[in-house]
Length: 295
Image 1: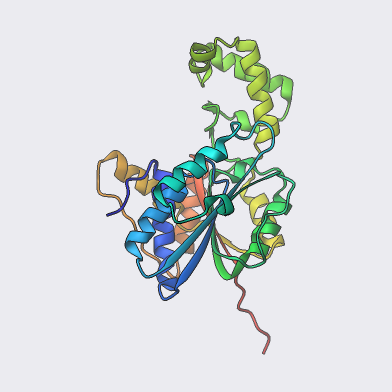
Image 2: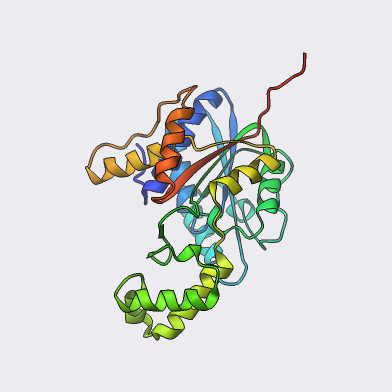
């Protein structure tokens, strides 16, 4: 029985991995890294489901997050370890989960993971060169990496629930922009004010700082340039499936836990990313593989 996901993003990532695992079904062990593991709900969902679907494969799932100011609540990792220990008591989660600084190297050996994933993380990465170099170093040859996140092209910023706020670089203008839209009822100010009684001036300044210091949106061009620099194959395979999963959920249709894997689907993916990059999250697939040989 498949555990009910907490979000469509979790279900989508499971469906991708379930599709890609067909090529790895004969393995006895699969190591997965959740970058930006947060509260551990995604790890719990994946491990519970994989243990049911693939009883002959030993899945080892690891995770890490950053402990820099403003990123996570104080002491959250203890709650994550407690949650996972309750459901998987035979695993020493204290050794599987780590906190690091955003400037640190990842605490894993070279080519240690078969699969590396992240959910709504790439728009918060401070140093993309460090991120992708560590991703390449720790991913095994032939491994796959899956990332669900919004690009700079999206018209509606999901953290503040405001249009285009992530495109503003001028801090003073951003503060004024957040304040103006909050005054007409857009965004999260009313909910924050109701729970904390924060003034609109402090709210606007605080969240302008959040956008400036803790988000870092890439365009498609910047993203492809970066991943090519670090020797990855890159595609937006499965981006369309994310939105079809959302639609199926809205229509109360049965979820798909495995997608159709096409060998030649570049045209479909191109249309998907051309249209959907303006809506919300895209799905980036990175492969550590290169087949060219000179005869």
